[in-house]
Image (cartoon, rainbow, N blue to C red; front, side, top):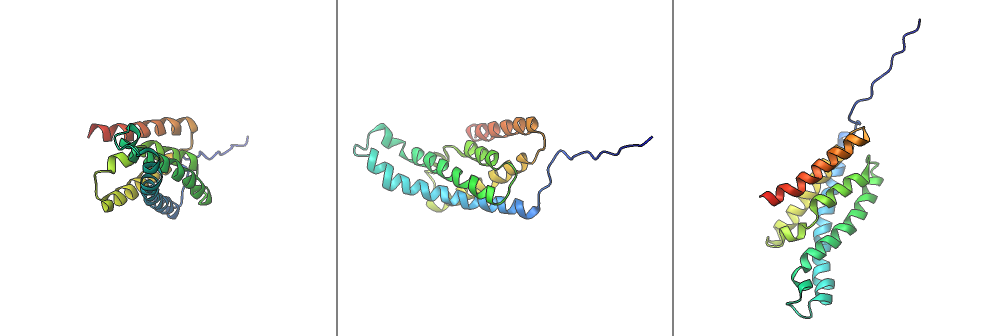
Length: 161
């Protein structure tokens, strides 16, 4: 009788360390890009459209709107960048980053310009790295559960502080 040897697949898909660094650097660059787009959209587009009357409701939240629009644009760029890097499940990574950092412009609006850029870059780098690690989980159901828990935690923890 012949014994068959089957190799068990690890629960985490292997990923090169250099690729992890590339994902973090991509997040860093996208964080700076998000900040830049937020500033451009706020100052040159949204204020011109909505702030004819400075007391208008849309004018009060123009920074938040600009940040959310920038987050969507950067998310599209992020998917393309991660696909070019051949990262596993790039859409999941970008979606997680967008969910976790939605409304970031409102969080950072009272900081100095340098602090805004640094926090934006740091948060994008950390969250892209975190979600890239979560995306490496082999089983789809498990990855979706962990993704949901991490996304929920990253939304709730800042509110508790």
